[in-house]
Amino acid sequence: QVRLMESGGGSVEAGKSLRLSCEASGYTFGDSYAGWFRQVPGKEREGVAAISPRSSTSSYTYYADSVMGRFTVSRDSAGNTLYLQMNVLEPEDTAMYYCAADTSSANLNDNKWRLRPSSYKYWGQGTQVTASS
Image 1 (cartoon, rainbow, N blue to C red):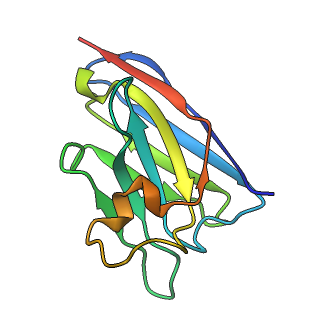
Image 2: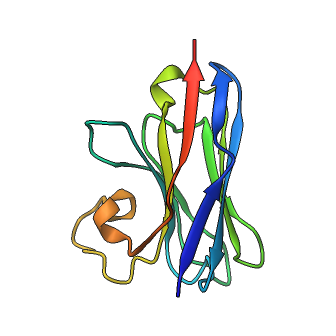
């Protein structure tokens, strides 16, 4: 049974940083794409960042325009933990953040499939991030 569990959320002042972690059991990050998503009440869940599977060369990362240059997605070498380093947080980043994994059933004809919630099979329960001005 696959289980993903996020941690590291909290309340910070705008301009500060947070690092989210997502620990997996029954699954190894790197076998497929993994990503971070966020959602605020009344809005759809949106993709924040994604990382490609492990390969013999390197991994590729993908970001929403709103977080490009401020957020960084990574995973540990063992593939047990996924991270999201969030710098220069803005009030607009306030949301529940979720990690997700396994895009084996994604619609690859969608050129934005890596950041589509519907592309991912496994989800964590979420961790709240609040950035206040």
